Image 1 (cartoon, rainbow, N blue to C red):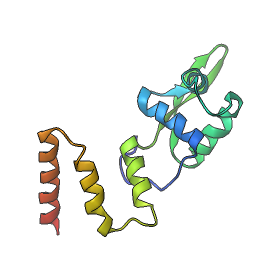
Image 2 (image 1 turned 90 degrees about the vertical axis):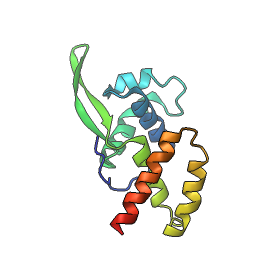
Image 3 (image 1 turned 45 degrees about the horizontal axis):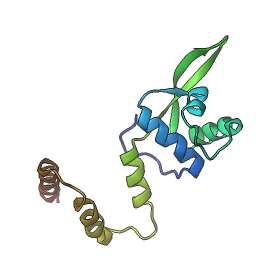
Image 4 (image 1 turned 45 degrees about the vertical axis):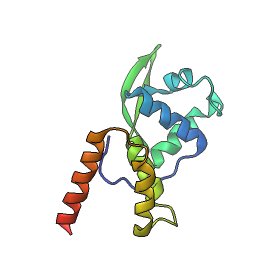
Length: 133
């Protein structure tokens, strides 16, 4: 999975359902596995080919390899970005995002933190960034 700054993309609702499954499962999935693992999907199983190709074109996913499926081989897919990286990408690409919005975003996120070690990590990140400036 690419952890560097990925090129911006936005997923459709159906693509996002597939991506959420891939993040949750944490291993390469074939088309048939994706269909099998999404019983409450909002998309039709016959559209899986179109959805995966769209996600490949966006560089949201990549082909991880192949698995034997009956007599044929099926491609398996993995995400190119983590769920955190995708969320950050969506925030940073918002037309209303600016440096001035960072304090309110961080405040909202920090209010959710209940572990002191995570708050300590955040303090270290801020100290390091101050030294860089």
